[in-house]
Image (cartoon, rainbow, N blue to C red; front, side, top):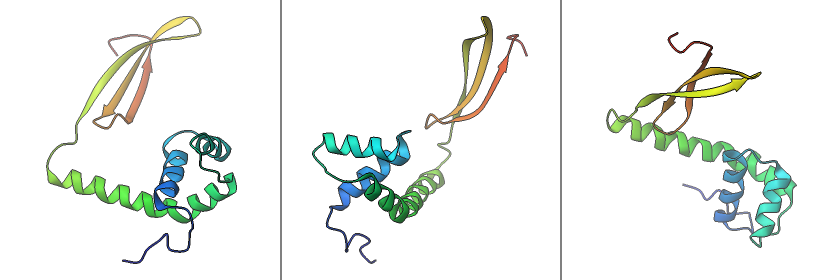
Length: 116
């Protein structure tokens, strides 16, 4: 397997950190630049964008591959139903959410009555 990071002066750990921060959290490129600067890493937001364009699909494929491998091991995929009371325009509504074992919301539904 060829080294994806061979022409880059920055270490692969920093590149992976910057790309994953941009992907995982709702941050802009400039916010990622600021967070890295606070950690003592001086890179431009344009550099983070270039890293995202080059390494984002590769990291996404790795994540998909590991997720599918863990899903094939056994029936570990689970979901549960959450009920949350929310106020919309001063009225109490019921928010029903189907959440999987990783915490991702699969489906959401809002009703005025609880028994629907």
